[in-house]
Length: 116
Image 1 (spheres, one colour):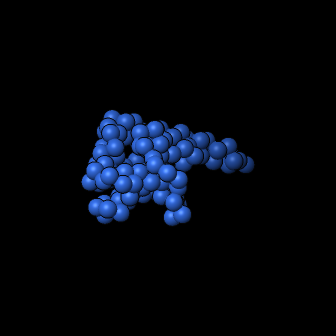
Image 2 (tube, rainbow, N blue to C red):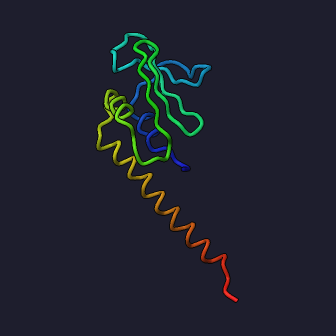
Image 3 (cartoon, rainbow, N blue to C red):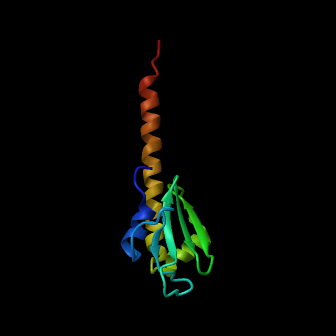
């Protein structure tokens, strides 16, 4: 996918503190354990969005472009005040983009085949 809708939700709703760590995590305070320090973070790499709290050891992942979010990742997003409707809308955008790409692929394959 060319656009990360779930990443966009995270960027718009999570308050990040400080710079991106050398490991690629964008630091934030964990809303699951109400940590007072920035010992948690989101990381976007290799087609996957990861969350990890180094205080309470909570971790969850989401594979970008899939049309399903695990319960654990959904509850992590909910803790950061991202509601289920917003998550479902973002997943719906992946579904629509997938349908459009499938249609374009079928259309392109029909145009390249010739009848003799």
